[in-house]
Image (tube, rainbow, N blue to C red; front, side):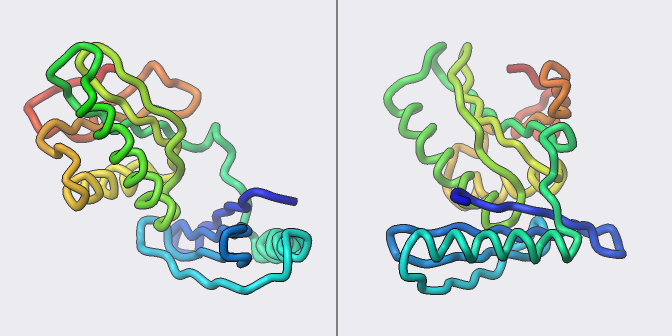
Length: 186
């Protein structure tokens, strides 16, 4: 087994929790990350001899999570949350491409350490940069994206956020806009 194991579980009060683990080849460590979705997670690292040893730990981690009632959230039960930045040009400039990389890097980290999902892709369309995130909790993801945009100086005044069910990617609803707006479009 290689890659990352990411699983979720609702507690008795309905709060969503997550656990994830992976092998960090650079440091030869097995990494576990866990906590309440939407909050900064806790992380534990264990030094391992090699990838084979990490695979054994990953398999054991997956088995323990399953035993504890954690499971992957199918894509169909998640939502698309799109962070969209208004641009001054139709196709984007070199500055906008730097914004794209900075925003993607910041969102990847910010969402991951809170169990809020993954950045799947980005695209430039007419006067917009859209960054598509697949998220298990829309409202917490929207809040986290706003915090991340402010903290990382990502042109917050040009940010809009829309969300749609995974199976209805053409039905976005506006969740946040820095400027007065009533709808969200890609």
